[in-house]
Amino acid sequence: MPHTDLVLLHAPSVYDFRERSIMFGPVSDLVPSTPIFEMYPIGFTTLAEYMERRGLRVRIVNLAMHMLAKPRFDVEAAIRAMRPVAFGIDLHWLPHAHGAIEIARICKRLHPDVPVVMGGLSASYFHEELVRYDCVDYVVRGDSTEEPFTQLLFALRRGGSVAGIPNLTYKTRDGSVVVNELSWVPDTFDHVKLDYSFSMRSVIRDRDFTSALPFRGWLGYPVTASLVCRGCTKQCPTCGGSAYAFARHFGRTRPAFRDPERLVADIKHVAKHIPGPVFVLNDFQQAGPDYVEAFIRGLQRIDFKNPIGFEFFTPPSEEFCAFLGENLNDWSMEVSCESHDDGVRAAFGKHYSFDDVAASIRHAFKHGCSRFDLYFMTGIPTQTAQSVLDTVPAVRELYRSVGDDRRLLAFISPMAPFLDPGSMVFDNPEAYGYRLRARTLEEHRQLLLQPSWKHILNYEPDKMTRDELVDTTYEAALGLNRIKGAIGILDEATATATEMRIEEARAAMRRIDAIIEDSDGDERERRLAAFKREIDQLNENTVCVKSELQWPRSVRPTHVVANVHLWLKVNAEILFPAIRRWRLAREEGAA
Ligand code: B12
Ligand code: SF4
Image 1 (cartoon, rainbow, N blue to C red):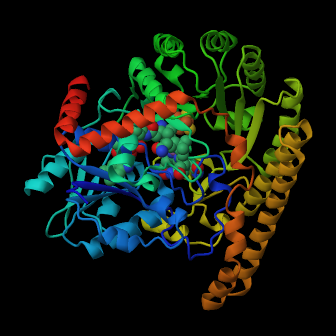
Image 2 (cartoon, rainbow, N blue to C red):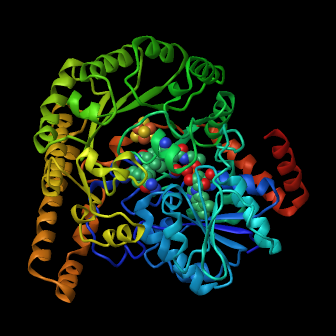
Image 3 (cartoon, rainbow, N blue to C red):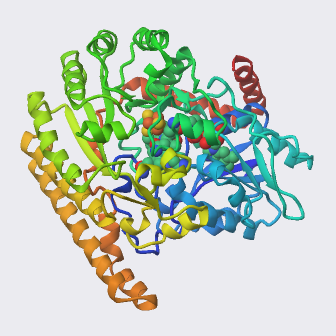
């Protein structure tokens, strides 16, 4: 391996998931990952490309993906073979609390002299607790760590002081914790590249395809995400990425938007190389009408052909849908309305009616929207078990009101495994009708090892028990599955298979409860272990199948040409490093 300054490691959510019997449940059914959350933060690519422009050498190794892909993949052997200046491990999503710390422990044990650096939103929230673990040397806080982390790496390389590095939490030799100011919080999102070029080049350069894969199954469904901003203008009370959470814990008082022309260029670059749909996250309407105009006209100018999907925080108006229809070829949208009940939705901080949702769906379809994904959630403030069950007839009625249009896809899933740290509810649970089952990082680590998602949940709402939450989530999912089967969105075989899986998952949850009730210690472990194969099969695709989330794609000859061209360029850079230096200097000048 050539000299590497930084190896960025992404851990599975639970390190030894291959040995443990844990019924993770439908925690990741509505994202592309499996329940071990193998997707690494997009920020790995912004960190890597920013650092490479400054002359550092960075490698991303997706350990979670390797462990999924090869049941015998030897994590320790892989880490032992690495010799970077520092290891970086993300603890961005709290569900990685177990895996991330176990990987840090392995790094420290095998390479006691190599510093371990952690970061991400959860690491930032729990920074003082995290840095006290023996295996962690530094935490770089905040939503934008490219510059401070680069400064840290240069300081580590030359053995210099870290006292002046912004956003850094660290331990001194005597073990005391120092918290530097969280002052590197850029106003814009323009200092980085978000066009996947680092990942594409690194596949060819490092000959490690698995590490670059964002999630299992990506090759069959190569979806990519484009990001409009860092931060959010909304105040959803359970969200650790809300305006409140950013202001209170991550030093950001307003979102940092990406220049719309850069966003268009990102999307154009992705589409040149990758045939899949592009998903634009973080509602671009937040940035105001001029941004909307510039972005959509930009997509029109490049005559964007791949399917493109947008996340919207509120149901779009007719005028807006018409504007999208006039300018785009193949567009879809996604809205999370959380509940059919206007009161529950308002308690979640979303102030629009279910009638507004229905109207927006009709407008979207009238103006050519390819599909409209509508998300519902269980476990949210003020929601009762009955309210969850009432979602089903309300959704049936909604389908009727749009003429049973098969382009509408409704989904339901639980707020799981965790209520987000840093959210308003996490900071003040009683005010929102919640009891927290874990507060500290260590408590969350321990929860992740519980045998089922009911036991892993870090909260219990006042209005329903965890048993009711689990049971009504499965019941509502059955209801939505039947509706989609009846309308013909799902073929009979798929709808029947999903129904069976939900029923089996429910039965498995009951069986786990029974094991917990009448056994403990080794006996309990033995009985759970005997059940592992079944549990593993039920852990994926419970409330729906991943293919339901997928939009169509098409490979064109231009993709093949573009990728062969890139392959040649990267290999030329390996043979002639001066070419690479010239490119990085040019990119740095353009940034
Ligand atoms: C985009 C997004 C997604 C995308 C993920 C795309 C991706 N690969 O990153 C999708 C939709 C797939 C997703 C899924 C999930 N998400 Co999400 N997501 C977001 C969102 C909307 C924006 C994040 C973003 O734009 N980041 C910008 C990118 C460029 O930066 P970054 O990746 O964060 O990385 C920077 C820093 O975090 C830090 N950093 C990251 N890693 C490391 C490592 C080191 C060593 C260092 C030093 C720094 C560092 O530095 C990076 C560079 O500056 C936020 C909400 C928000 N408003 O922020 C929620 C959010 C991050 N997601 C959240 C959650 C809970 C999830 C899920 C667990 C939900 C679920 N149960 O399925 C899954 C996990 C998926 C997985 N890992 O497999 C929570 C996290 C709360 C928490 N603290 O745990 C958030 C805050 C809000 C929410 N509820 O949605 N998510
Ligand atoms: S859940 Fe709400 S607060 Fe969180 S990122 Fe989405 S819109 Fe913003």
